[in-house]
Image 1: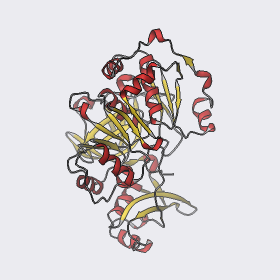
Image 2: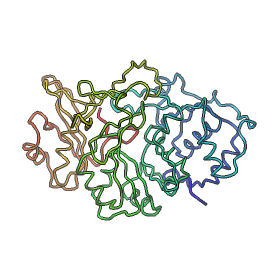
Image 3: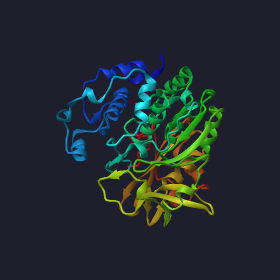
Image 4: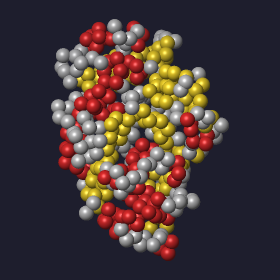
Length: 411
């Protein structure tokens, strides 16, 4: 029996056959889906596709006040309705299910909420074509086993889900597991593909063993540094490593083998750079409650590497830049400098209000050595970055604060 999803955190081991029987026996549908159970979320999405109806994905930890603010409701029982079985024939097997899911969907749309890394989440809706824009279906891809390392109700997780779903793959939940648990799941299940944030990958490092089953590593959602890239090459020796740029509003747009992205020919007229900010034409966007002009300002600051062809690397989010006495500090730059110090496992740089300077730079550090001190970090940084970028406050912690999607929490 081929596995659909393994989720040890929720004690789930679900085959494709169980999924098909479960769908055939389901008699009600609610367009709102709020669950901490990965299988429940995935089954709900599949039902919405078969019914050709909208689905609204809500984070399982949204509070009552957040739900009211974002949707106008806190209780969604009133939206439950019976399924008209005459419009949804019984499924016979996995192949038939995938064929039905791959067909055109006229009314279907999926509504997500942004991660809220630095503010209130925004609602974004996508149709089937935009959400599956980069899904690749092939005989080779049908052999993939996916390590699922994202929140299932956000864009990155949904895109991994559709890649696995339309190829009939198995998914193994890795998101939320500790380091040893992740190692065990990769090894025991022969995982071949993992897509995750750099923060997730740094959780695995350093590692004394290698995992030869992994063929493809994809990183996205945050800036990917060279040190992490080299370390991943060592523990995944057979993997091709790809860096992607994606957003909830537009889905996946760019992919690269390093931190430098090249504008593909078909995107030349729908991507712009304005004052070092990436702009996206509205035709690439999902629909939102916020009115979008012809060009959408992503808020991503980029550095142009060459103009012909246009190549660039991402620097940071405009909203994450820290004002220190009139100087702009990029927290990612400071983090990358600290990460080059041997014995540092992970770091998060953030601002703290200051009556004189506006903000001061602070950081949380996860170390692998008791010999690292505040003074040793500051002394190391003296030759790496300018004085005003060096953290005034350094805290040593066991783990870093992250958002619902596994990115570093900046505020």
